[in-house]
Length: 105
Picture 1 (tube, rainbow, N blue to C red):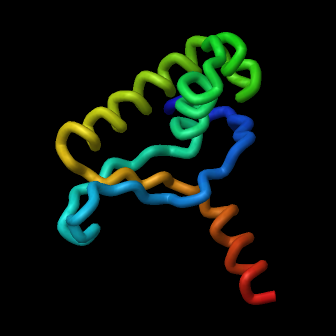
Picture 2: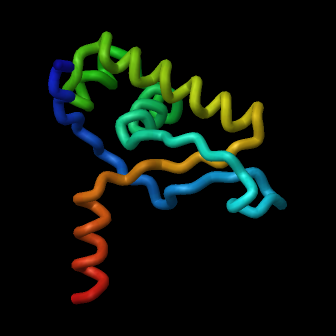
């Protein structure tokens, strides 16, 4: 049985959950799913310019785990750019449920 995935600390929620090539309807594109922790790892390492050790500390995970998450994120983004796929940022169910509750209030 695989080990339980520890909870990652995510500071920034994406403002949108899809990126796609311009001029092609989304329904015609294949998608690459980017997990929220992968999104956060790109934000911390590439946008904020943090070293992996510092970024891992912010996410409350080991440096090795951060490196693995970042490597997977880079691979997915590269695949989407090179092969012309849409990127869908997976927002956890709890957040979607909270948004529905807030929208109906």
